[in-house]
Length: 170
Image (cartoon, rainbow, N blue to C red; front, side):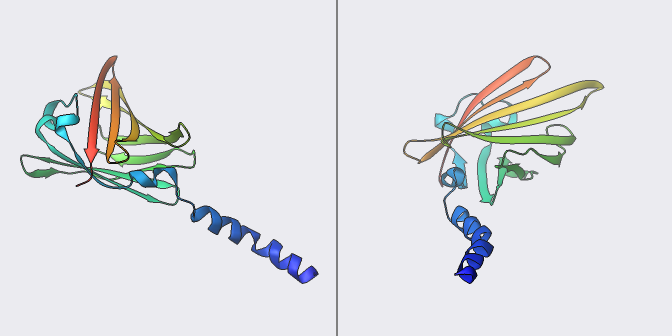
């Protein structure tokens, strides 16, 4: 009896970890490769207006990797995946775009895991003037999971730019 209790107590952390990892995470339905559907999207500006945009989303444990692959006139723009933490802790990434520096990343789930809120903030120097750029994205599956809608709001120096990006599976 004591041996059985001892074995149960010793294996409890393993049983808890494996039972939690076998449960699907709310963002799992958002993972995979997505292609921008320009006809359903709004507010694309600059080079993105005519670009091919693909979103590659992966989850490993508590880390969500998001890579935006952009091709302008058939040429791929250099990019790197951003890694957000899904456990409530912030993360950082060293980037050269949109500004060179350290990008602060935060992610949280809203509406019982149905909506993903991503925030990135970077401060730097733009032509000799200090600038802080904050981007907030709200991700939501629509059309019974066939499409991923991202509402993106970017704010810097008192200016705001908003766009709605709708992606579908290739």
